[in-house]
Image (cartoon, rainbow, N blue to C red; front, side, top):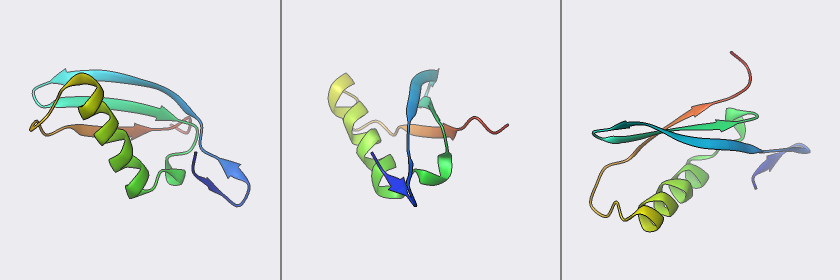
Length: 66
């Protein structure tokens, strides 16, 4: 998991909120720790696991700070 200055990213859960296009909420402890590369890794993992090949996927980050 990515980290910055001793703070580690903790992924709480992933929830699909829309189907067209597939949109997911990724709940984390601190969204500033999520780099573009890690977000792309998550996106590619979802595509591979659930067969969304050729489908645009949106990922929205949400953290504990409201």
